Length: 137
Image 1 (cartoon, helix red, strand yellow):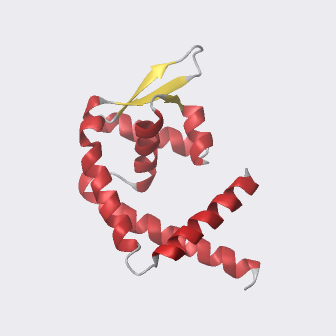
Image 2 (cartoon, helix red, strand yellow):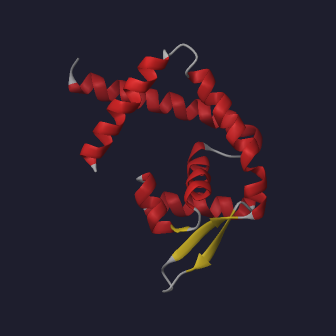
Image 3 (cartoon, one colour):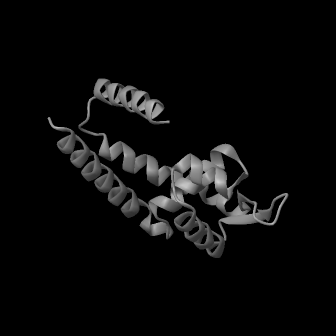
């Protein structure tokens, strides 16, 4: 397999997984990018917008748009930091309440996507992805 073919299939797979997740989240008015932010905030608690960008490998402008959408939906709030440019982002009570429903939909989606993918292959893929990601960081 050439490097081009490897990256091409990775991009195709990534796009397909994102589309499937978007469909699962559609009934809640959420998209995969919003879910990523919500999940990180649920896991890590209140963090800065810059930390969110760095953790999710997302540029500042699209992250700002995602956060603004989540603020309008009532799922996150922005808290001023030490200086005027720093903003902490945290989940609202409404988001904390709704989180189990969203997580259930995501879990069901993931399980469906993995239905025909053997457990040992899942473990190996997770291992390989971890190694590759560490090398890139």
